[in-house]
Figure: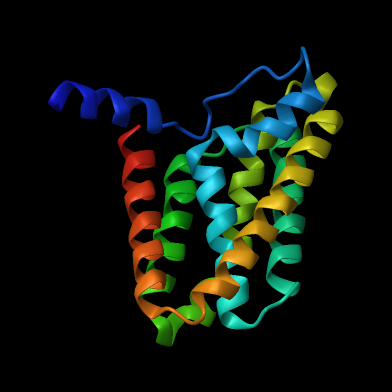
Amino acid sequence: MKKTFALLLLMLALPAFAHPGHDTHPLQDGLLHPLTGLDHLLMLLGTGVLAALTGRTLLLPLATLAAMFAGAVGGHLFGNVLGMETLIAGSLVVAGAAMLLPARQLLLALAMPVFALFHGWAHGVEATPSAFWQFSAGFVAVSGLLLACGYAAGLLLRRHARLQKAFGGGLLAGAALVLAG
């Protein structure tokens, strides 16, 4: 049982730079990337949930997408930034904390576009320079869909404080997995 659990944790603990070299099928790789990186998946779903819980209908998801794309351009042009992995994991801690601290939810939600900048930066660093625009089109499209899915989940979570706390705990557990990876 312990070996199975350890193997499961190893498979889930995906670092942000788990997918470099997107030059063979850049659009397809971009479409899949937000779904295969636990950190990106949880950040986008968490931000969508926070948008619904704080009443930031389109503002927060659009600001998050814009910051993510701006970060991707920065990563493409300037390369890696020291501490990016920690900032990416930090986004999950902030989103999880927002679920557990309703009085601070709006303030913490407004920090998510700043963290999205670093998620995007990681995308820009990972993308092969000649395939950057195709890869970016893919990850931005799927990121928007994940934000929308998170928003829909957030509308359901509005009525259930216990489920909000469980979701927040899941985000914190995801942050621990990302940091362990």
